[in-house]
Length: 72
Image (cartoon, rainbow, N blue to C red):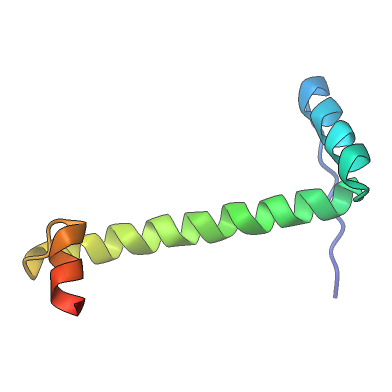
């Protein structure tokens, strides 16, 4: 099932979206859907990283190098 969402954009952002759609031959809706999906994925990733970093520090993993040493 799909849901329709109406979004009001500032003129500059709307113009940039229009140009991108024109340049890439894609429709604005697809660009916005892809952008939102990426934004939501990154948001979930940051939240998960924040939760896991607390546990990692408690286990002695402070830097990326600590993790790489452990898994190598």
